[in-house]
Amino acid sequence: MSYARQMLDTYSRTANVDADLLAAVIDALSDCAQACDADTAADLSEQNVAEMVTCIRLCMDCADICIATARVTSRQKDYDASVTQPLLDACAAICRSCGDECERHARMHEHCRVCAEACRRCERACRDLLDAMK
Amino acid sequence: MSYARQMLDTYSRTANVDADLLAAVIDALSDCAQACDADTAADLSEQNVAEMVTCIRLCMDCADICIATARVTSRQKDYDASVTQPLLDACAAICRSCGDECERHARMHEHCRVCAEACRRCERACRDLLDAMK
Amino acid sequence: MSYARQMLDTYSRTANVDADLLAAVIDALSDCAQACDADTAADLSEQNVAEMVTCIRLCMDCADICIATARVTSRQKDYDASVTQPLLDACAAICRSCGDECERHARMHEHCRVCAEACRRCERACRDLLDAMK
Amino acid sequence: MSYARQMLDTYSRTANVDADLLAAVIDALSDCAQACDADTAADLSEQNVAEMVTCIRLCMDCADICIATARVTSRQKDYDASVTQPLLDACAAICRSCGDECERHARMHEHCRVCAEACRRCERACRDLLDAMK
Image (cartoon, rainbow over all chains, first blue to last red; front, side, top):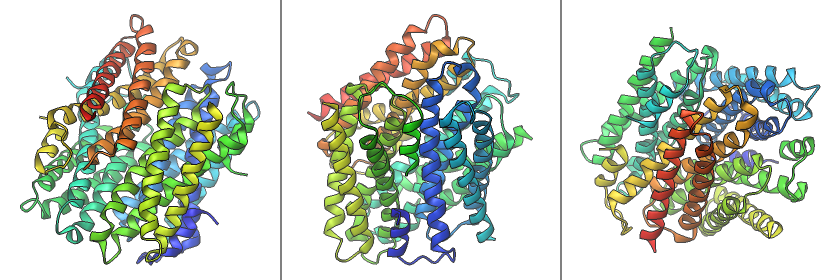
Protein backbone atom coordinates (compact mmCIF):
# COMPACT_ATOMS: atom_id res chain seq x y z
CA MET A 1 0.00 0.00 0.00
CA SER A 2 1.48 3.36 -1.04
CA TYR A 3 2.13 6.18 1.42
CA ALA A 4 -0.48 8.26 -0.42
CA ARG A 5 -3.09 5.58 0.40
CA GLN A 6 -1.89 5.13 3.98
CA MET A 7 -1.98 8.87 4.63
CA LEU A 8 -5.47 9.25 3.20
CA ASP A 9 -6.69 6.64 5.69
CA THR A 10 -5.35 8.57 8.68
CA TYR A 11 -7.51 11.65 8.57
CA SER A 12 -11.02 12.53 7.58
CA ARG A 13 -11.56 14.76 4.61
CA THR A 14 -14.69 16.66 3.76
CA ALA A 15 -14.11 16.05 0.06
CA ASN A 16 -16.38 13.31 -1.18
CA VAL A 17 -13.81 11.85 -3.55
CA ASP A 18 -13.07 8.16 -3.10
CA ALA A 19 -9.76 7.55 -1.30
CA ASP A 20 -8.69 4.77 -3.69
CA LEU A 21 -9.14 7.07 -6.66
CA LEU A 22 -7.33 9.93 -4.96
CA ALA A 23 -4.39 7.73 -3.94
CA ALA A 24 -4.15 6.38 -7.48
CA VAL A 25 -3.93 9.92 -8.85
CA ILE A 26 -1.26 11.02 -6.36
CA ASP A 27 0.82 7.89 -7.07
CA ALA A 28 0.44 8.28 -10.84
CA LEU A 29 1.50 11.94 -10.65
CA SER A 30 4.52 11.10 -8.57
CA ASP A 31 5.53 8.18 -10.84
CA CYS A 32 5.09 10.28 -13.96
CA ALA A 33 7.24 13.12 -12.59
CA GLN A 34 9.96 10.62 -11.73
CA ALA A 35 9.80 8.91 -15.13
CA CYS A 36 9.93 12.27 -16.94
CA ASP A 37 12.96 13.46 -14.94
CA ALA A 38 14.76 10.19 -15.66
CA ASP A 39 13.74 10.30 -19.33
CA THR A 40 15.07 13.85 -19.71
CA ALA A 41 18.46 12.66 -18.50
CA ALA A 42 18.36 9.51 -20.65
CA ASP A 43 17.43 11.55 -23.75
CA LEU A 44 20.41 13.82 -23.12
CA SER A 45 22.69 10.76 -23.17
CA GLU A 46 21.51 9.62 -26.60
CA GLN A 47 23.67 10.08 -29.69
CA ASN A 48 20.74 11.54 -31.60
CA VAL A 49 20.13 14.21 -28.94
CA ALA A 50 19.12 16.78 -31.58
CA GLU A 51 16.12 14.59 -32.41
CA MET A 52 15.16 14.34 -28.74
CA VAL A 53 14.82 18.08 -28.10
CA THR A 54 11.01 18.15 -28.19
CA CYS A 55 10.89 15.09 -25.93
CA ILE A 56 13.24 16.77 -23.43
CA ARG A 57 11.20 20.01 -23.43
CA LEU A 58 7.92 18.16 -22.84
CA CYS A 59 9.37 15.90 -20.13
CA MET A 60 10.65 18.93 -18.19
CA ASP A 61 7.27 20.67 -18.31
CA CYS A 62 5.45 17.43 -17.52
CA ALA A 63 7.58 16.74 -14.44
CA ASP A 64 7.09 20.28 -13.07
CA ILE A 65 3.33 20.25 -13.59
CA CYS A 66 2.92 16.72 -12.16
CA ILE A 67 4.90 17.64 -9.04
CA ALA A 68 2.83 20.77 -8.38
CA THR A 69 -0.41 18.86 -9.02
CA ALA A 70 0.69 16.01 -6.71
CA ARG A 71 1.53 18.45 -3.92
CA VAL A 72 -1.71 20.41 -4.20
CA THR A 73 -3.75 17.19 -4.47
CA SER A 74 -1.97 15.59 -1.48
CA ARG A 75 -2.87 18.58 0.65
CA GLN A 76 -6.44 19.14 -0.45
CA LYS A 77 -9.02 19.12 2.27
CA ASP A 78 -11.90 20.57 0.32
CA TYR A 79 -11.60 20.70 -3.42
CA ASP A 80 -11.67 24.21 -4.78
CA ALA A 81 -12.86 23.44 -8.30
CA SER A 82 -11.72 26.81 -9.66
CA VAL A 83 -8.11 25.78 -8.96
CA THR A 84 -8.09 21.97 -9.02
CA GLN A 85 -10.02 21.61 -12.27
CA PRO A 86 -7.81 23.75 -14.54
CA LEU A 87 -4.72 22.33 -12.81
CA LEU A 88 -5.82 18.76 -13.58
CA ASP A 89 -6.72 19.89 -17.12
CA ALA A 90 -3.22 21.33 -17.63
CA CYS A 91 -1.71 18.17 -16.18
CA ALA A 92 -3.75 15.82 -18.38
CA ALA A 93 -2.85 17.97 -21.43
CA ILE A 94 0.91 17.91 -20.81
CA CYS A 95 0.77 14.15 -20.02
CA ARG A 96 -0.96 13.60 -23.36
CA SER A 97 1.57 15.70 -25.35
CA CYS A 98 4.52 14.18 -23.52
CA GLY A 99 3.11 10.64 -23.84
CA ASP A 100 2.58 11.14 -27.59
CA GLU A 101 6.11 12.40 -28.10
CA CYS A 102 7.68 9.66 -25.94
CA GLU A 103 5.72 7.04 -27.88
CA ARG A 104 7.26 8.27 -31.13
CA HIS A 105 10.67 7.25 -29.72
CA ALA A 106 9.48 4.13 -27.89
CA ARG A 107 10.79 1.62 -30.40
CA MET A 108 14.22 3.15 -30.51
CA HIS A 109 14.55 4.09 -26.84
CA GLU A 110 13.23 1.81 -24.10
CA HIS A 111 13.35 4.72 -21.60
CA CYS A 112 10.86 6.60 -23.77
CA ARG A 113 8.59 3.55 -23.86
CA VAL A 114 8.51 3.35 -20.07
CA CYS A 115 8.00 7.13 -19.77
CA ALA A 116 5.15 7.05 -22.32
CA GLU A 117 3.43 4.41 -20.18
CA ALA A 118 3.78 6.56 -17.03
CA CYS A 119 2.36 9.58 -18.92
CA ARG A 120 -0.64 7.56 -20.20
CA ARG A 121 -1.43 6.22 -16.74
CA CYS A 122 -1.15 9.71 -15.27
CA GLU A 123 -3.33 11.30 -17.96
CA ARG A 124 -6.03 8.67 -17.30
CA ALA A 125 -5.80 9.17 -13.53
CA CYS A 126 -6.19 12.97 -13.89
CA ARG A 127 -9.22 12.53 -16.14
CA ASP A 128 -10.77 10.00 -13.71
CA LEU A 129 -10.42 12.52 -10.88
CA LEU A 130 -11.87 15.28 -13.06
CA ASP A 131 -14.86 13.04 -13.82
CA ALA A 132 -15.32 12.16 -10.13
CA MET A 133 -15.27 15.86 -9.18
CA LYS A 134 -18.11 16.76 -11.52
CA MET B 1 16.37 44.83 -15.48
CA SER B 2 15.36 41.39 -14.18
CA TYR B 3 17.07 38.19 -15.27
CA ALA B 4 13.78 37.08 -16.86
CA ARG B 5 13.87 40.17 -19.11
CA GLN B 6 17.61 39.80 -19.84
CA MET B 7 17.21 36.13 -20.77
CA LEU B 8 14.26 36.83 -23.06
CA ASP B 9 16.44 39.29 -25.00
CA THR B 10 19.14 36.69 -25.65
CA TYR B 11 17.27 34.25 -27.85
CA SER B 12 14.58 34.41 -30.44
CA ARG B 13 11.26 32.81 -29.72
CA THR B 14 8.63 31.88 -32.20
CA ALA B 15 5.89 32.83 -29.75
CA ASN B 16 4.45 36.18 -30.67
CA VAL B 17 3.98 37.29 -27.08
CA ASP B 18 5.60 40.61 -26.16
CA ALA B 19 8.83 40.13 -24.17
CA ASP B 20 7.99 42.88 -21.66
CA LEU B 21 4.70 41.20 -20.86
CA LEU B 22 6.30 37.78 -20.58
CA ALA B 23 9.08 39.03 -18.30
CA ALA B 24 6.51 40.78 -16.11
CA VAL B 25 4.60 37.50 -15.71
CA ILE B 26 7.69 35.46 -14.86
CA ASP B 27 8.83 38.06 -12.30
CA ALA B 28 5.35 38.30 -10.76
CA LEU B 29 5.11 34.49 -10.46
CA SER B 30 8.51 34.29 -8.84
CA ASP B 31 7.77 37.17 -6.43
CA CYS B 32 4.40 35.68 -5.51
CA ALA B 33 5.89 32.26 -4.77
CA GLN B 34 8.49 33.88 -2.56
CA ALA B 35 5.94 36.04 -0.72
CA CYS B 36 3.67 33.02 -0.17
CA ASP B 37 6.48 30.87 1.24
CA ALA B 38 7.51 33.67 3.59
CA ASP B 39 3.89 34.33 4.57
CA THR B 40 3.34 30.65 5.40
CA ALA B 41 6.24 30.81 7.83
CA ALA B 42 5.13 34.14 9.27
CA ASP B 43 1.56 32.85 9.78
CA LEU B 44 2.94 29.86 11.67
CA SER B 45 4.71 32.26 14.06
CA GLU B 46 1.53 34.12 14.98
CA GLN B 47 -0.19 33.59 18.30
CA ASN B 48 -3.54 33.17 16.60
CA VAL B 49 -2.22 30.39 14.35
CA ALA B 50 -5.56 28.52 14.47
CA GLU B 51 -7.15 31.48 12.67
CA MET B 52 -4.41 31.44 10.02
CA VAL B 53 -4.93 27.83 8.88
CA THR B 54 -6.82 28.70 5.68
CA CYS B 55 -4.22 31.34 4.85
CA ILE B 56 -1.40 28.80 5.33
CA ARG B 57 -3.14 26.21 3.15
CA LEU B 58 -3.73 28.68 0.32
CA CYS B 59 -0.20 30.12 0.49
CA MET B 60 1.32 26.63 0.17
CA ASP B 61 -0.79 25.79 -2.89
CA CYS B 62 -0.20 29.24 -4.39
CA ALA B 63 3.59 28.95 -4.05
CA ASP B 64 3.67 25.49 -5.66
CA ILE B 65 1.47 26.49 -8.59
CA CYS B 66 3.34 29.79 -9.15
CA ILE B 67 6.70 27.99 -9.20
CA ALA B 68 5.55 25.39 -11.73
CA THR B 69 3.93 28.09 -13.88
CA ALA B 70 7.09 30.23 -13.74
CA ARG B 71 9.27 27.30 -14.78
CA VAL B 72 7.04 26.24 -17.66
CA THR B 73 6.63 29.86 -18.81
CA SER B 74 10.39 30.54 -18.60
CA ARG B 75 11.06 27.59 -20.87
CA GLN B 76 8.31 28.07 -23.42
CA LYS B 77 9.41 28.35 -26.98
CA ASP B 78 6.05 27.92 -28.66
CA TYR B 79 2.99 28.25 -26.49
CA ASP B 80 0.96 25.08 -26.36
CA ALA B 81 -2.41 26.62 -25.48
CA SER B 82 -3.86 23.28 -24.29
CA VAL B 83 -1.32 23.31 -21.44
CA THR B 84 -0.44 26.96 -20.85
CA GLN B 85 -4.00 28.24 -20.79
CA PRO B 86 -5.41 25.96 -18.03
CA LEU B 87 -2.14 26.34 -16.11
CA LEU B 88 -2.46 30.14 -16.14
CA ASP B 89 -6.16 29.76 -15.26
CA ALA B 90 -5.28 27.61 -12.25
CA CYS B 91 -2.59 30.08 -11.25
CA ALA B 92 -4.85 33.13 -11.54
CA ALA B 93 -7.53 31.28 -9.52
CA ILE B 94 -5.23 30.34 -6.63
CA CYS B 95 -3.71 33.86 -6.62
CA ARG B 96 -7.22 35.28 -6.32
CA SER B 97 -8.23 32.93 -3.46
CA CYS B 98 -4.92 33.42 -1.67
CA GLY B 99 -5.00 37.20 -2.21
CA ASP B 100 -8.56 37.39 -0.82
CA GLU B 101 -7.64 35.39 2.28
CA CYS B 102 -4.41 37.35 2.89
CA GLU B 103 -6.32 40.60 2.56
CA ARG B 104 -8.67 39.49 5.37
CA HIS B 105 -5.64 39.46 7.69
CA ALA B 106 -3.88 42.48 6.17
CA ARG B 107 -4.78 44.94 8.91
CA MET B 108 -3.63 42.65 11.69
CA HIS B 109 -0.58 41.16 9.97
CA GLU B 110 1.66 43.28 7.77
CA HIS B 111 3.12 40.08 6.19
CA CYS B 112 -0.34 39.20 4.91
CA ARG B 113 -0.75 42.70 3.46
CA VAL B 114 2.50 42.37 1.49
CA CYS B 115 1.59 38.84 0.38
CA ALA B 116 -1.89 39.97 -0.75
CA GLU B 117 -0.23 42.61 -2.93
CA ALA B 118 2.08 40.01 -4.53
CA CYS B 119 -0.93 37.74 -5.20
CA ARG B 120 -2.93 40.57 -6.79
CA ARG B 121 -0.04 41.56 -9.06
CA CYS B 122 0.49 37.92 -10.05
CA GLU B 123 -3.19 37.32 -10.77
CA ARG B 124 -3.26 40.40 -13.02
CA ALA B 125 -0.08 39.33 -14.81
CA CYS B 126 -1.48 35.83 -15.48
CA ARG B 127 -4.71 37.31 -16.85
CA ASP B 128 -2.78 39.77 -19.05
CA LEU B 129 -0.82 36.88 -20.55
CA LEU B 130 -4.02 34.88 -21.06
CA ASP B 131 -5.52 37.86 -22.90
CA ALA B 132 -2.40 38.29 -25.04
CA MET B 133 -2.43 34.60 -25.99
CA LYS B 134 -5.99 34.75 -27.33
CA MET C 1 8.75 -2.77 -9.90
CA SER C 2 8.81 1.03 -9.48
CA TYR C 3 9.28 3.43 -12.40
CA ALA C 4 12.59 4.53 -10.86
CA ARG C 5 13.84 0.91 -11.10
CA GLN C 6 12.43 0.41 -14.61
CA MET C 7 14.01 3.63 -15.87
CA LEU C 8 17.41 2.77 -14.38
CA ASP C 9 17.36 -0.48 -16.36
CA THR C 10 16.82 1.30 -19.68
CA TYR C 11 20.04 3.21 -20.00
CA SER C 12 23.64 2.74 -19.05
CA ARG C 13 25.14 5.02 -16.48
CA THR C 14 28.80 5.55 -15.84
CA ALA C 15 28.15 5.87 -12.11
CA ASN C 16 29.16 2.70 -10.35
CA VAL C 17 26.32 2.83 -7.86
CA ASP C 18 24.12 -0.26 -7.72
CA ALA C 19 20.79 0.25 -9.51
CA ASP C 20 18.75 -1.40 -6.72
CA LEU C 21 20.23 0.96 -4.17
CA LEU C 22 19.66 3.99 -6.40
CA ALA C 23 16.05 3.04 -7.14
CA ALA C 24 15.41 2.50 -3.42
CA VAL C 25 16.72 6.01 -2.67
CA ILE C 26 14.64 7.67 -5.39
CA ASP C 27 11.49 5.84 -4.26
CA ALA C 28 12.13 6.65 -0.58
CA LEU C 29 12.66 10.35 -1.42
CA SER C 30 9.48 10.49 -3.44
CA ASP C 31 7.44 8.65 -0.76
CA CYS C 32 8.82 10.88 1.98
CA ALA C 33 7.97 14.07 0.07
CA GLN C 34 4.45 12.80 -0.45
CA ALA C 35 4.00 11.75 3.20
CA CYS C 36 5.32 15.13 4.40
CA ASP C 37 2.98 17.11 2.14
CA ALA C 38 0.03 15.04 3.33
CA ASP C 39 1.13 15.33 6.97
CA THR C 40 1.37 19.12 6.69
CA ALA C 41 -2.24 19.22 5.57
CA ALA C 42 -3.36 16.73 8.23
CA ASP C 43 -1.57 18.69 10.97
CA LEU C 44 -3.38 21.84 9.87
CA SER C 45 -6.71 20.03 10.34
CA GLU C 46 -5.96 19.10 13.96
CA GLN C 47 -7.65 20.90 16.83
CA ASN C 48 -4.32 21.36 18.59
CA VAL C 49 -2.76 23.04 15.56
CA ALA C 50 -0.69 25.37 17.75
CA GLU C 51 1.18 22.32 19.07
CA MET C 52 1.82 21.10 15.51
CA VAL C 53 3.63 24.22 14.28
CA THR C 54 7.13 22.73 14.49
CA CYS C 55 5.92 19.57 12.78
CA ILE C 56 4.38 21.61 9.95
CA ARG C 57 7.56 23.67 9.48
CA LEU C 58 9.77 20.59 9.33
CA CYS C 59 7.42 18.70 6.98
CA MET C 60 7.43 21.61 4.52
CA ASP C 61 11.23 21.81 4.46
CA CYS C 62 11.54 18.03 4.30
CA ALA C 63 9.20 17.77 1.30
CA ASP C 64 11.05 20.51 -0.63
CA ILE C 65 14.48 19.04 0.02
CA CYS C 66 13.35 15.47 -0.77
CA ILE C 67 11.82 16.58 -4.08
CA ALA C 68 14.96 18.43 -5.18
CA THR C 69 17.16 15.50 -4.12
CA ALA C 70 14.91 13.02 -5.95
CA ARG C 71 15.04 15.07 -9.14
CA VAL C 72 18.79 15.56 -9.08
CA THR C 73 19.35 11.88 -8.21
CA SER C 74 16.95 10.69 -10.94
CA ARG C 75 18.92 12.64 -13.52
CA GLN C 76 22.45 11.86 -12.39
CA LYS C 77 24.68 10.35 -14.98
CA ASP C 78 27.98 10.78 -13.21
CA TYR C 79 27.87 11.64 -9.56
CA ASP C 80 29.43 15.00 -8.80
CA ALA C 81 30.33 14.39 -5.15
CA SER C 82 30.74 18.12 -4.41
CA VAL C 83 27.00 18.56 -5.04
CA THR C 84 25.42 15.18 -4.36
CA GLN C 85 27.14 14.58 -1.03
CA PRO C 86 26.09 17.79 0.77
CA LEU C 87 22.62 17.50 -0.80
CA LEU C 88 22.20 13.97 0.59
CA ASP C 89 23.62 15.20 3.92
CA ALA C 90 21.03 17.99 4.04
CA CYS C 91 18.31 15.54 3.10
CA ALA C 92 19.29 12.96 5.73
CA ALA C 93 19.45 15.76 8.35
CA ILE C 94 15.98 17.15 7.63
CA CYS C 95 14.55 13.60 7.47
CA ARG C 96 16.02 12.95 10.90
CA SER C 97 14.64 16.19 12.42
CA CYS C 98 11.27 15.73 10.77
CA GLY C 99 11.12 12.04 11.72
CA ASP C 100 11.94 12.88 15.35
CA GLU C 101 9.24 15.54 15.53
CA CYS C 102 6.63 13.37 13.80
CA GLU C 103 7.42 10.53 16.21
CA ARG C 104 6.62 12.82 19.17
CA HIS C 105 3.05 13.06 17.81
CA ALA C 106 2.79 9.47 16.56
CA ARG C 107 0.67 8.16 19.40
CA MET C 108 -1.85 10.97 19.13
CA HIS C 109 -1.89 11.33 15.35
CA GLU C 110 -1.71 8.29 13.09
CA HIS C 111 -0.73 10.54 10.14
CA CYS C 112 2.40 11.56 12.06
CA ARG C 113 3.23 7.91 12.74
CA VAL C 114 3.07 7.07 9.03
CA CYS C 115 5.08 10.19 8.13
CA ALA C 116 7.74 9.38 10.75
CA GLU C 117 8.15 5.96 9.14
CA ALA C 118 8.59 7.51 5.67
CA CYS C 119 11.19 9.94 7.09
CA ARG C 120 13.14 7.13 8.81
CA ARG C 121 13.20 5.03 5.63
CA CYS C 122 14.32 8.03 3.59
CA GLU C 123 17.05 9.01 6.05
CA ARG C 124 18.41 5.44 5.94
CA ALA C 125 18.28 5.37 2.12
CA CYS C 126 20.19 8.67 1.87
CA ARG C 127 22.85 7.40 4.27
CA ASP C 128 23.13 4.11 2.35
CA LEU C 129 23.76 6.03 -0.87
CA LEU C 130 26.28 8.29 0.86
CA ASP C 131 28.11 5.15 2.09
CA ALA C 132 28.06 3.60 -1.38
CA MET C 133 29.46 6.76 -2.96
CA LYS C 134 32.51 6.80 -0.68
CA MET D 1 12.72 46.74 -2.64
CA SER D 2 12.19 43.03 -3.33
CA TYR D 3 9.36 41.03 -1.78
CA ALA D 4 11.95 38.96 0.09
CA ARG D 5 13.20 42.16 1.79
CA GLN D 6 9.69 43.47 2.45
CA MET D 7 8.58 40.16 3.97
CA LEU D 8 11.63 39.96 6.23
CA ASP D 9 10.71 43.37 7.66
CA THR D 10 7.21 42.25 8.63
CA TYR D 11 7.97 39.69 11.26
CA SER D 12 10.59 39.12 13.90
CA ARG D 13 12.92 36.21 13.53
CA THR D 14 15.05 34.73 16.24
CA ALA D 15 17.84 34.06 13.76
CA ASN D 16 20.56 36.61 14.18
CA VAL D 17 21.33 36.83 10.48
CA ASP D 18 21.18 40.32 8.96
CA ALA D 19 17.95 40.88 6.96
CA ASP D 20 19.77 42.59 4.06
CA LEU D 21 22.07 39.59 3.68
CA LEU D 22 19.19 37.14 3.91
CA ALA D 23 17.08 39.02 1.35
CA ALA D 24 20.07 39.18 -1.02
CA VAL D 25 20.47 35.39 -0.77
CA ILE D 26 16.78 34.68 -1.38
CA ASP D 27 16.70 37.05 -4.38
CA ALA D 28 19.92 35.59 -5.83
CA LEU D 29 18.57 32.03 -5.48
CA SER D 30 15.33 32.96 -7.16
CA ASP D 31 17.10 34.84 -10.00
CA CYS D 32 19.53 31.97 -10.52
CA ALA D 33 16.75 29.38 -10.74
CA GLN D 34 14.95 31.54 -13.29
CA ALA D 35 18.08 32.13 -15.37
CA CYS D 36 18.91 28.39 -15.33
CA ASP D 37 15.42 27.38 -16.45
CA ALA D 38 15.54 29.93 -19.28
CA ASP D 39 19.07 28.88 -20.21
CA THR D 40 18.04 25.21 -20.41
CA ALA D 41 15.37 26.14 -22.94
CA ALA D 42 17.70 28.44 -24.88
CA ASP D 43 20.41 25.73 -25.02
CA LEU D 44 17.85 23.30 -26.46
CA SER D 45 17.14 25.78 -29.26
CA GLU D 46 20.79 25.99 -30.35
CA GLN D 47 21.99 24.27 -33.48
CA ASN D 48 24.94 22.79 -31.62
CA VAL D 49 22.69 21.21 -28.98
CA ALA D 50 24.96 18.15 -28.68
CA GLU D 51 27.69 20.46 -27.32
CA MET D 52 25.26 21.97 -24.81
CA VAL D 53 24.31 18.70 -23.06
CA THR D 54 26.49 19.26 -19.98
CA CYS D 55 25.23 22.83 -19.71
CA ILE D 56 21.61 21.64 -19.86
CA ARG D 57 22.21 18.95 -17.23
CA LEU D 58 23.86 21.39 -14.83
CA CYS D 59 21.23 24.10 -15.36
CA MET D 60 18.43 21.64 -14.52
CA ASP D 61 20.11 20.54 -11.28
CA CYS D 62 21.03 24.12 -10.41
CA ALA D 63 17.45 25.36 -10.83
CA ASP D 64 16.03 22.56 -8.67
CA ILE D 65 18.55 23.04 -5.87
CA CYS D 66 18.21 26.86 -5.93
CA ILE D 67 14.40 26.63 -5.70
CA ALA D 68 14.50 24.24 -2.72
CA THR D 69 17.14 26.37 -1.00
CA ALA D 70 15.14 29.55 -1.63
CA ARG D 71 11.99 27.99 -0.19
CA VAL D 72 13.69 26.61 2.92
CA THR D 73 15.58 29.88 3.45
CA SER D 74 12.42 32.01 2.98
CA ARG D 75 10.68 30.01 5.69
CA GLN D 76 13.46 29.73 8.22
CA LYS D 77 12.69 31.00 11.65
CA ASP D 78 15.64 29.53 13.48
CA TYR D 79 18.50 28.23 11.42
CA ASP D 80 19.05 24.53 11.88
CA ALA D 81 22.72 24.39 10.88
CA SER D 82 22.63 20.60 10.33
CA VAL D 83 20.24 21.18 7.42
CA THR D 84 20.90 24.73 6.19
CA GLN D 85 24.68 24.40 6.05
CA PRO D 86 24.93 21.33 3.77
CA LEU D 87 22.03 22.67 1.68
CA LEU D 88 23.88 25.97 1.11
CA ASP D 89 27.07 23.97 0.44
CA ALA D 90 25.30 21.90 -2.22
CA CYS D 91 23.81 25.05 -3.70
CA ALA D 92 27.12 26.91 -3.85
CA ALA D 93 28.74 23.82 -5.43
CA ILE D 94 26.17 23.43 -8.21
CA CYS D 95 26.21 27.22 -8.85
CA ARG D 96 29.98 27.00 -9.26
CA SER D 97 29.83 24.00 -11.65
CA CYS D 98 26.97 25.50 -13.61
CA GLY D 99 28.59 28.94 -13.71
CA ASP D 100 31.86 27.42 -14.98
CA GLU D 101 30.11 25.50 -17.72
CA CYS D 102 27.93 28.46 -18.77
CA GLU D 103 31.03 30.64 -18.92
CA ARG D 104 32.62 28.24 -21.40
CA HIS D 105 29.74 29.05 -23.80
CA ALA D 106 29.44 32.74 -22.88
CA ARG D 107 31.16 34.12 -25.96
CA MET D 108 29.06 32.09 -28.35
CA HIS D 109 25.75 32.26 -26.50
CA GLU D 110 24.65 35.45 -24.75
CA HIS D 111 22.06 33.46 -22.74
CA CYS D 112 24.90 31.45 -21.20
CA ARG D 113 26.78 34.67 -20.33
CA VAL D 114 23.74 36.03 -18.46
CA CYS D 115 23.16 32.67 -16.74
CA ALA D 116 26.84 32.45 -15.70
CA GLU D 117 26.50 35.86 -14.05
CA ALA D 118 23.37 34.74 -12.14
CA CYS D 119 25.21 31.58 -10.98
CA ARG D 120 28.27 33.57 -9.81
CA ARG D 121 26.10 36.02 -7.86
CA CYS D 122 24.17 33.14 -6.28
CA GLU D 123 27.30 31.21 -5.35
CA ARG D 124 28.73 34.32 -3.64
CA ALA D 125 25.43 34.96 -1.82
CA CYS D 126 25.31 31.36 -0.51
CA ARG D 127 28.90 31.60 0.70
CA ASP D 128 28.22 34.96 2.39
CA LEU D 129 25.31 33.42 4.28
CA LEU D 130 27.43 30.39 5.22
CA ASP D 131 30.08 32.78 6.60
CA ALA D 132 27.47 34.78 8.52
CA MET D 133 26.04 31.61 10.07
CA LYS D 134 29.36 30.51 11.52
